Each structure stands twice: as structure tokens, then as C-alpha cells.
Image (cartoon, rainbow, N blue to C red; front, side):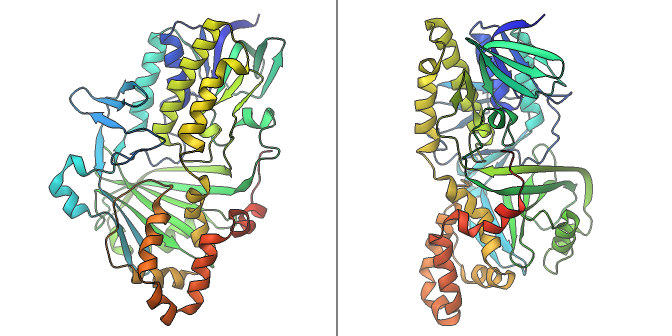
Length: 444
């Protein structure tokens, strides 16, 4: 017998758990489906950062209430309890392969100011998910872990979600199944969606790393002929780092990336005593956002409809808004697109109109276009500390302002790089990433 629900939520990450929580609080009959057996367990690469405490992020000015352990979203009008550890982040430090460093923010000066100078906080994502799951279960939401969704179909005025030999039927479905969303694929959203490549990541959780500023996120960029990025993100609640290797070339062996980085002349001193205590990986498709993420009583939220980097903060916002909008639609008997128009307007205003996703993709275009020695040269020319930010959509704009200040010197010493910098600024993402697009495997 197929059980009927007001709402089925697919995916129990921050967006899905938040949507199920809000719908449960509003009294809806909710099913939450998740393919992981242990929902709070982190099984894929994740930097685990709260973002943008000194600037708006998707229209929101976040705050963390340490006294009551609450993450607050004052513009959207909600907060959530979070009892896990946190750690302030004050700057981003970028390195070339030869150790030339650029500084987006200054940890030394920010530490003197303290909490008010943070640009982000690291949290424990497992603790976040565990807290949300506890709330969801307390509210009577039926949670189905270890449930792998493999199909979806609209039948009359209801939607059926298929998971092996199980069927779940609901008036609405919220798809929160991430960047590689099966729901988006099954509903045809990816057929004409711009595709930019397949991002492969490998993460080592490491302790006893020395010489890295513990209050900064540190990036290292390697250009052609072996383009990749390494990020060191501090852990919350203990000393150590998530060491994340990223590449858009599936032919590059992840171990080769880490061996080159950790064995490099500049970086090897960081890892002399380091120990690897955990290893994770992820394969993620890079898509353009879905501007209107609704079809057949299914609402796509968070990274399911975005490019990437909705982050946990943006995903929580999406879950909160979607849970409330679906509740209102059911209350008003608006079973269709008109019922979720408020979410679709909010999505466009808060996400699509806030940022150009192509600014984020520049993070991956940079090592694809420039050679390793060119990155070394460019980083050596940037001497001044730039304004602190951990906004993935603003970083290369900030760096571009600083490069413009030294463009005269670059034109004299390396005129060949002036054309490359102009190409980087003006050429379409499709052209800059053409090889990565060919190498990837889009789930259309």
C-alpha cells in the first residue's frame, strides 16, 4: 500500500532537513527520504564553513548568537539551534606553487579586534545535521534513511517518488538532492542547461600541520600543465585541517596532486609531522542555475537548483522558505505553480539576481588558463593586503582590482600576460572551460 503525504522531501542535507523541519512545525504530514544510512555522517568533501559574516550573502546578514548557540537569519526572520563547535575565520591566503602569497584580509590585525572581525566561521556539519534530524524526528516527520530514489512521476494531482520497490506519494515534493540531483535529471531540467565540467575532489582530514595560519582559509593554485587547486580549511573544535584537492581534469590522479603539493619546496615543511586521519572524495557536475526551479508539483531547492556554493547557509534559507511556502500553498488550496510563486520570486531575488554564478566559476577557470610560472609571477606582483572576504562570487573581482594597480609594471615586464588577463576577464566561461566540458560526464 502506498502511503500518502502532504509533502515528500528528497535529500537530508541542510536544505532538505530544514524544509522537513519547517513543514513538520507547520503540522504537515511529511516524509523525508535520504540515501545515506547514517544521515549526520559526512561522506563527501565539504569545507564546512558558515560564510559572509561581514557582508550580505544571498541577501542575508547572518549572525551567530553565542549565548544561546543559535545561527540567526534576521532578514529572513528565523534562527536555528546549533550546539556544535565553531571557529572564526579572518582571512583568505592564496599561494602559488613557489610560495608567493596574496592576502585577502589580515589575520594578525583581525585577531586584535576579535569576533567582530570574522569573515566566516567553521562549524561541524555533522553536528548541524544531527541537531536538525533530532528536531525533524521530534516533530513526527517520517524519516526513511538508506532509501535510494530512482524515479519520480506526476499522476493527476499528486506526485509519486520511486525508491526501489517502495513508492511515496505526496501533494508536493521538495527536491534537495544536491548538485548531482537525480530529480533535476528525471524532470528534464538538465537537457538544455549549460554545463561547465565535472569537478573532482579528494579531501584529507589532517592533524599536526605546521606553519599554516589557523584562522585563515589557505588556497594554493597550480596552473598548466597540471591545473589544480588545494584548499586548507581549519577544523572546528580541534586542531587540524580539511586539505581539499580540486581539479576539473578526470585524467589527473588525486594522489599526484597531493604528492606534488605536500612535496613542494615551499609547502613540505607544513606536513613534516602531519597525520591523515580521514579521507573523503566527491564528483560534482558544474551547471548553470535553474532560474525557475519548479515543475509538476516539484520544487527544487539549494544546490539542486544552484550552480554550487549555496553553502549550508543558503541551503538553510532555501529549506526554511520552501517549507513555509508549501504549507501556505496547501492551506490555500493552491496545488500547482501558483502555490509556490512566492518561493520562485524569493529565489530569483535572493539568488539569481544577487550573484552572477560565472564569477564563482572563475575559481576553476584561473588554473585552466594560466601556466604555473605565470601564476607565480602574478602572485609575486600583489603586495598589498586586500579587503577581507570569503564570498566565492567576489574573490576574483577583489584580486582584479589589485592587479589593475600593477598592470603598468606587468605590461612592461610580461606583455604576454596582459592579453591573458584580458582574456580571463572577458571571455565566456564556455570558451575558457571548453576542455573541461569535453572531459566531463553530464547527467542529462
